[in-house]
Length: 198
Image (tube, rainbow, N blue to C red; front, side, top):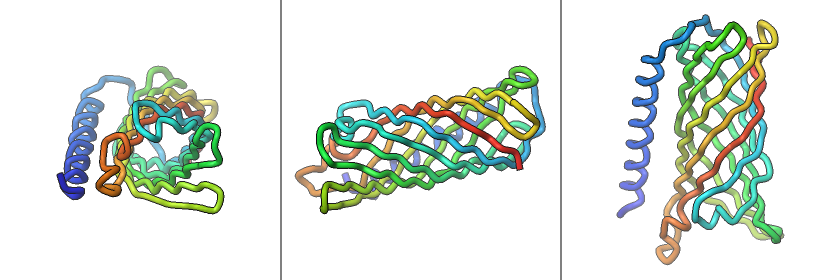
């Protein structure tokens, strides 16, 4: 299976996921509240899972800067940049992850001050591995889903926690290493969030 075919398959599946989630979110009932443009900062801990070479790495830190652009009273377009860092246990090998991504969030107001935001999206991630003086890098397509309960503490500030899942599909390595074990990253993300209205 060629690399371009695999990438097309991942993009098609991610597009279908975003479309289905958007339709489900639009069908969800809940109190509506006018949305404003805002910035969200997420910071937390990535936990690698699954059976891949990256699951041997320990999460150190992860964070996002997200721009929330309202498309309706509840639907938001959410472009973001992300940084994550992983360490290989008991070694000096680190993996730095730099991502640019875009997705959609759906604002569901539960009470006047409490809301829930389910979100999903797709992005590009650059993996940069470093060990002592040696370094190498690879590219990936990433998808993610998350659920974020938030509490409004003032008219322009919300705080909350985010629970997410991210999957990254790395570009094709050397033929001998071209296996799912060497091509994927799966991680759970637990993050604190701060949103400031613009």
